[in-house]
Image 1 (cartoon, rainbow, N blue to C red):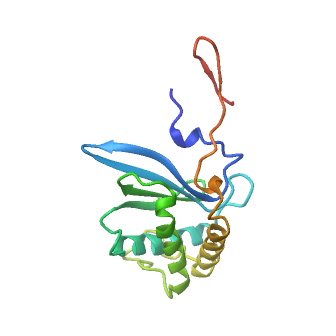
Image 2 (spheres, rainbow, N blue to C red):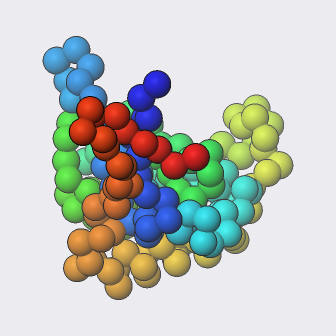
Length: 174
């Protein structure tokens, strides 16, 4: 069985940043999945679950209402490992090309007074939100992106290296 693209990224070397996870063709259209990584996997604690949920609500709402981007947004949601989010957009832009969109989305969290859709009618776990921690994570990520804007490593996935025999057989870590 072929290893999927997101599992071929070297998670021991990835740092917070904006990365292309995959690009797909759907009909005549291209869609790109971006990895918006807030923490170092397996090196830093996972993002607080309630804060992650709040960030999901706030940023998804902001992206889908952004007049310049709303028609390009397909999906915004958390990674299962709780180290970041996936953003799926129509088209194929470089991570650098969406940096300002991501900065704007995370900066908007600071101005949020309440989590959109955090009611029993609108949310499957409406009591699991933490706006204060969401603001903390968002501010930390904004500061990090600003401080590292010239660092190419925040835009390029580190790939795992696989031993390949002369016959073409690949060996994977166990």
